[in-house]
Length: 557
Image 1 (cartoon, rainbow, N blue to C red):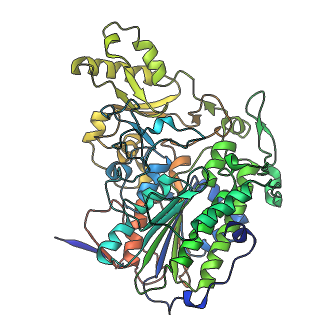
Image 2: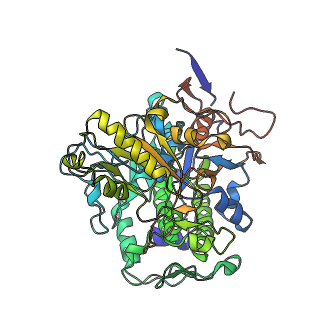
């Protein structure tokens, strides 16, 4: 076989960082980093990075001193959390990884609820992601079994069994898509504390850590002071007759757990737990390389709840910068030799009501009938279809649409053609793509910014999971018909405000450079493989190794 060689406690965290024990200090720096830390900041677009870069003084400032690629791309059309995280440590597009969206429809699944969550195992009887509520957090078993390819940490363990592959995130799908199917340790937030899918494998400090968070959330939280550079964004934007956004400072009442996720404290908690994992498990202290995957979700929740253009996002990014700085300082105090890569799973778009005030008059919310329900209302009048039940299935106004499999093939094709034509007539829809035609297309190559909409859709299309047709909305159409508490803005489009994300590599002593040409998140895994000397069969990555040496050397040789 031909090979290509890639030469490759919570309150205490916010207040002060503790000094590590002497035994935690790693030995002299080697050519390979002892610890690779892959950080994904959910919904951290290139637009946000560019807008706020000059204000960074902490951890994000440190990372800009390494290799900076401000025009990274999540090249695919399905710019959601699960597909985006699936690219970062696998090096392949979501269609190849099998992670086509956060949710999709499987009409053959043996349960009434046909919606499949990307990070569940629906084979387990009695589970249903569709039953998710704020109280139960869903009746499903979190799993990465839908991920069809290995992550970098999983590949590393095959050749270096002593290496540890660990993950911690605010969301289960973030942790699992970056850690893979068999991480040594994995944690995510689920309602009342951090938990894991692995019975009997627990960080000893976790119960005490969760208790500290619970105690912290039982107390009220004072507003966060508005940084000087955020003052201009501290302006109310009405989204309906009863609600306005743009002035919230993350004050929290007693027992404020429900709003914990959409606050900077959420990322601080994840980083505090990551620090405990590094210290308690002595990550990065042995001769081999360990991998720690970190998913920071607060920016996404803030973006959904308040939009990307207000004081809320400004405060959040200031706190993120500060908390990352504290985390890196903790690693320095432990004496770890670590390399960091930071990117995002997707970008995001601001709420249309603010965009309309800022030079985007075409910004709008989706029509309430532009979805599968609207199609089914029309098809319900067709007597030939009535005996088959629901005709069209979809989880969202955009993305994958499925035709009832019990409808005979010739009639199914007629229904599909009619449904596609009806969606295409909407003045909010840019294009409707035939799934059968997408399945015949090769994975796109060439400059990612020049990909056609069909090529972007192909990158997140899997023939066994994707829809009979794909709906892509026009620019600046927000697929939320009515703003509601916690959900006023979103992402998921094929447009660059959702596709473009920063990619930064940093290691102590490396030369700084900035490269503005387009690269992709699928380039991260082969680049890291190069750094740690991991051999991977040619063709197993969709991305390429990026030379981050910054000088005459080549980190890809």
